[in-house]
Amino acid sequence: MSDNVVLTVTALNRYVKSLLDSDVNLQTVYVKGEISNFKAGGAGGHFYMTIKDENSRIRAAMFRSANSRLKFMPENDMSVIIRGRVSLYEQGGEYQLIIDDMQPDGAGALAAAFEQLKKKLAAEGVFDEAHKKPIPAFPERVGVVTSGTGAAVRDIINVISRRYPVAEIIVCPVSVQGENAKAEISSAINLFNEKKAADVIIVGRGGGSVEDLWAFNEELVARAVYASEIPVISAVGHETDFTICDFAADLRAPTPSAAAELAVPDSAELTDSINALQRAMYAYSERRIAQERSKLGCISSLIEKNNPKVVIESYFLRIDYIYDSLKNAAGLCLERNRSKLNETVLRLDACSPLKIMSKGYAVAVKGSRIVKSVTDTEPGDEIDLKLADGTARCEVKEVWKK
Image (tube, rainbow, N blue to C red):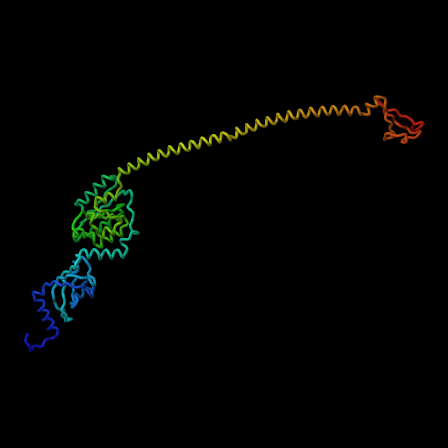
């Protein structure tokens, strides 16, 4: 560029930008630093940030086409390793780092994404125990959301068919890895709920790498599991594998086969339990019948002892005894009184005026009064002499005293 050429600001920035863009050494650079001033979204969905270390900083941008491939969300103070290119933002006159890829420094991107989503959903209560639903004891239909051709679906079907053959198994085959997996898994869970097609749902797949299992760490799947009205058992990978789906589910199983065992009871164990209960019921019934029979015998004895008929008969016997006693007492009393009466009659008869008069005595009556003294009469009075066999009227001729 000539020394005497006068450039506009725009031309200068454009020239510097062309120098930066054409420098092979700046086309692909790897930069390690810490994120600050992070901004996401906007109309274009781009990320803007500053990358800094102890002494310097540089502005950086990550366009939507690049950041859509990230498994984690960048955050302030996060240490990252960036692959990108150096360019210049003409309007601002600032050189910047255009980020093509980004990885957390230390833990991998998937691990960072896992922890970020786990922390977010935990804060929202998606993993709360209070929200988890009990697994039905005797499900009639078991829904299975997994690959239609993998070993997991065969294991689940075999275990359920062996343990609880009366259950209907409804398989909704889905992709369990790849770009479409999260949408297919969440849609299958939602479909089971819309159709009310199962009493419990098993969601999962067999083992694999972290990348293979990643569909079960997606927020879309976790929210579908959380929103399910049907209880969900998560069975992803092996016993040591843990996914976001495990935390959101109502129950976590270490393997798909274990999930099948947790989803249905063992019919053989149920049979044994029913037989044991039947035996216990019979034994209890026999003991109870014996106890009640003994009680009934005691009650019967009491009833017999206190039978109204028996009581009435005893009262009748008592009445007869009392009647006989009264009759005997009355006869003795009557006899005694009869004897007394005879004695009294004899005494009265002995004292009877008629008896006396039959011996020659008479009773003098003047008018209506008995003459008891010579003073009761005087010469010339007429008196009646009542004799034993009649009455004689007499005239008093003379009265004298002893």
